[in-house]
Length: 132
Image (cartoon, rainbow, N blue to C red; front, top):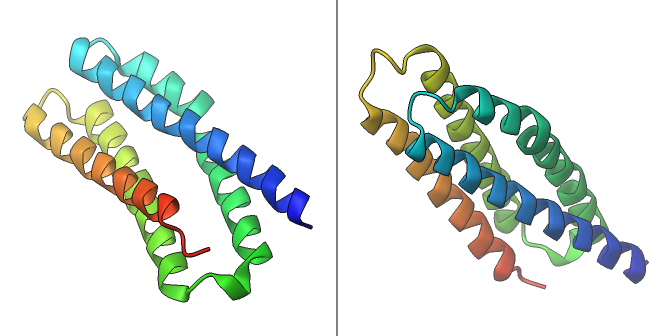
């Protein structure tokens, strides 16, 4: 059972690193090519971010179910809320950038990216200080 947990945790960690790097790459595309990066960011979102996010959910819930008695409820709730906020802010960024980038100030896009980044940092903090 321990080997299964470690195996799933390894894949959870790798997909989290890929997800974080993909967020950073897409944010960098937006910063460098403000208007012309939409297609590349949408491709990155569809091909990397969404599959890794789904994989994070599946492996995260599996890890919690394997260690359910050792994890406090507040930690599990904080992880779920942090994940929802991070993904929600990312999809809000995509939505605003896709449909309203010509009408809206770039500061609103920056705010959504900053909120997403803070939520991801919060998740990294939670994962590195997991009560195990």
